[in-house]
Length: 141
View (cartoon, helix red, strand yellow):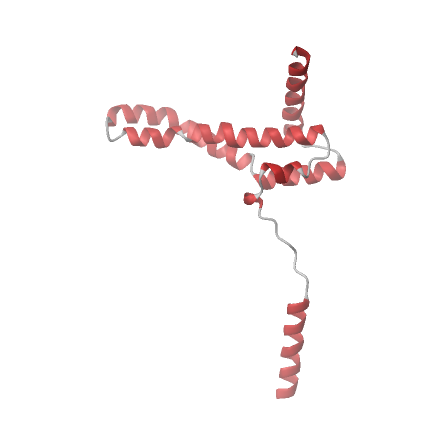
């Protein structure tokens, strides 16, 4: 009985220690340069630019107003209440944009684009607008 338990235990330990584990990607730690390595053409580079622009500039910019408004509460509570009414919707929209343009979604869109050469409709529209904007800049120079 003890021998069979020891043999079973030994087999389970050996199977678990020699099994190959998947490398989990930590999407939050991926940077712009990591995503440019996944870029296969100018469209995927534009997608990366759109995601990082929306996340870094737009979302964080909108979310920065609410902490300033809360800080003003110490000086003037009446003014702070009015400014909070204005900045709270911006904060909520910025939070939504951070969720919508997160790194994991960008990674999924880029890998899907590399495999099938198709983009989701909402990404395709934004990429098309950005590519047209880049073409306008080139024409001006």
